Figure 1: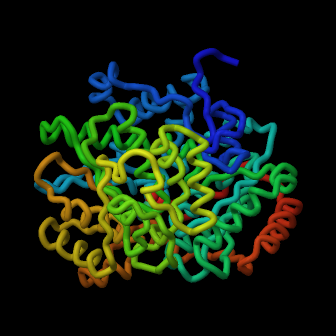
Figure 2 (figure 1 turned 90 degrees about the vertical axis):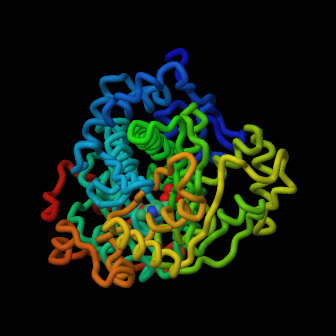
Length: 477
Ligand SMILES: *Cc1c(COP(=O)(O)O)cnc(C)c1O
């Protein structure tokens, strides 16, 4: 093994440390914790030089110290992954006076998850190297599934099974998954909520014999490689806004569901990027907003909203943040997770240190507030927000746009959510790729809310479908 290569530890502290490559292939640590880097590279010495880099160069600079790959190979993977983006800046910044919007939706499925999942798909194919197979299993509340499928469809050695809550994702999001022709892809509608889908995934991953026999892998936001790819645009967005405004530090407003996106921002801050505030935006499912404003982390029912990709109560990446809040003490994390499991809640009084983290501020937005933000932004700037991005802009406005500039992260193209946009501005937004999907045939699978049913389906599918040798043509892209 090479010297000085960063390793990964479990947030719960009872699993052996792993290399980057192992961490990517396993996803979840064997003790049920999440993998975090042993140390966080400090960029202080390099950051001046980083400001003039292209997105691709910056991606290399940011990611390289976290990985164990030869630079040439990482460069190939990054280049291939960014190659599917249709904008030359990859994540362009749009500014309207004090409103700065970082558009993360120029990938194949028009949502920010493409940034992580194009990378992960190519990384998996590279690590498997034609010698091994992997069966990916994921739960999605909408965008993850289609972006994961777009990242791995037709990749040699990989099959993917995506569970989504039947009837609770947008029709277009469903079509983005069910129209993919590649045989290594199965999108499965589960009769339940997103949390039910996630619970099935967790249960199957904790079935050690099944996991081992069928080489299960994760693509959900717990995979470290996804977090890693997302750190890059925090740097890119901060540098572009600093250039434009002359500011020395910036804030970010982040529409949050599973805490993956904003956790990448937190990592960027820990690396030394001058971020003065992370504004966490939720929709009506406000567990995280409650936590960051009062220290109360207690789950309730998932409420369906106009921003379905944020309809989440238990944020799967949150344990990574708790690990740092616990002073990187895995014993404390284990206790907290135990308390949360037993009582459905956690109060910060029970935690060490101050109740509130000054880096974060949190703002929830219900559907009317989200619609109003879409309407007002359209009226004042002529810019159409999707309902997730609107939660972020709403949060930024609540915090006030004077002070350090706020980079509002735009997580999806507005055409993905035509009903919400129509309600807000009297017409839907459109996008050619999505219009084209409406003509394509679909392949649908439907299963009850039950881990055994999903396990049986997977076994049958794996034993009857070879992993692909090449990609099918995607007629709409
Ligand atoms: C996934 C998603 C989010 C939430 O991101 P997390 O990383 O889960 O916090 C927000 N908006 C859109 C459009 C998404 O697809």
